[in-house]
Amino acid sequence: MANTTGKPAIEHSNPLAQTLLEKLDYDQLTNCMRCGFCLPACPTFRETGMEPASPRGRIALMKAAVDGIMVPDQQFEDQMNLCLGCRACEPACPADVKYGQLIEQTREAIEEHATHSLPIKVVRKTVFKKVFPKRSKLKLLGGTLAFYQKSGLQKVAHSTGAMKLFPKHLAEIESIMPSSSSKGVVDRLGTFYPAKGEAIAKVGMFRGCIMDVMFADTNVNTVELLSAAGFDVYIPESQVCCGALYAHSGEMNDARQLAAVNIDTFKQLGVDYVVSNAGGCGALLVEYDHLMQDDEKYRESAKWFASRVIDVSALIVEKGRVPKFAQQESSPQAERIKVTYQDSCHLRNVMKGSSAPRTLMKQVANTDYIEMVESDRCCGSAGIYNIVQPEMAGSILEHKMEHANNTQASYMLTSNPGCLLQMKVGIEKHQPDQPMKAMHIVDFLHDRMIVSE
Image (cartoon, rainbow, N blue to C red; front, side):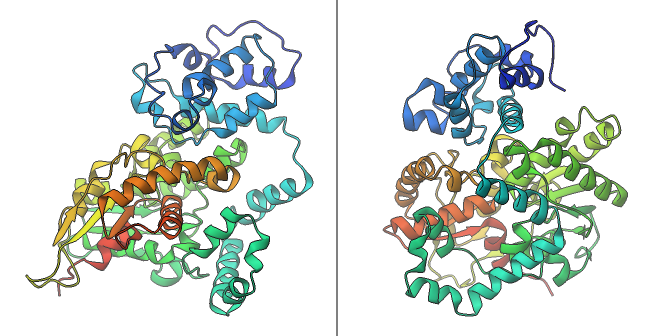
């Protein structure tokens, strides 16, 4: 519910300005003290040095548009779209300004008045209406990608130079895509997986969209890791996309419709926790209460849901029986390996989940954890940001890989699929001095879990 307290009594002639006035939380706009603490936390400000490319600058632009001081034009929209939405500014803000909510409200207003080209309209309709809301279409997508990868078509595309027809950044992502599958976690494990030993709690696993197509193995490993930690795991088939991609793209009504389905699904199960293994998904799930605050039917249920959302690492560390982990070569003479970690922005800044992954990594025998400089800085993935803003994303990744190389780590771990793909691109492109492999932390831990008979 956008706060109307103190809003200027203006009727804007510009349609976008009027919609911004209606949608933006004016209290949050005025809460910004212009102190500048957000500036060093903001990746786009650090890259450009330009005030409009900072959270403080963007808030100033929003307020100027709402107050009638400026007319929101293409430059206004460009600056809003340049934001990664990493929300690193929020922990840095002494006034607790909800910048993430403001940028989503602004993008929703922009989308209401956007005039997309025909190709963009087709892509948005296909993605938002045909694929992500429907599990059958996601399975078809997974099967198609799997056929492309396993049939030899991918090798042909590379050997003939066909990938050169695509933009460079898309070709880079295609080259490091993991093995896809039409068989997700439910197809492999069913909708219930019991705890090893006495059950601590009843957990509902959020399987996601891309996670269950391109990272289905990670979903399976998540369930088995949770089971080993003492949780009964339920994976309801009726769950749908979390809605994060929709919310970040200004499609808020669709995001709310998806949220309603998920709230009903998990509440009917009566789970103690809703667990996520993708920081981007978890960040929206944990804010369903804000997303649904204007919906009288779902307001209270959304609070129930949001209060139960937790990242898999945090759940294991805080509530579970932490399994024992060891390197696959577990002899005393086995060489110790170095691991480092790239924070998922949304896990760290929204879900406040930066410590649990590190705690688990440090418990793996024969492992040295190396903290990467600026591991809390965005890698440039940010959902589909590296696709729609490749130049800025690439520049951010350059700096990230400098820090990664300095760790001399053998493994780069993270907790979000987008971050994982971006780090794979970075490793492939920049070739660190020490051979390095990017992995989801769940896969790293699962591979090293000591299974008791």
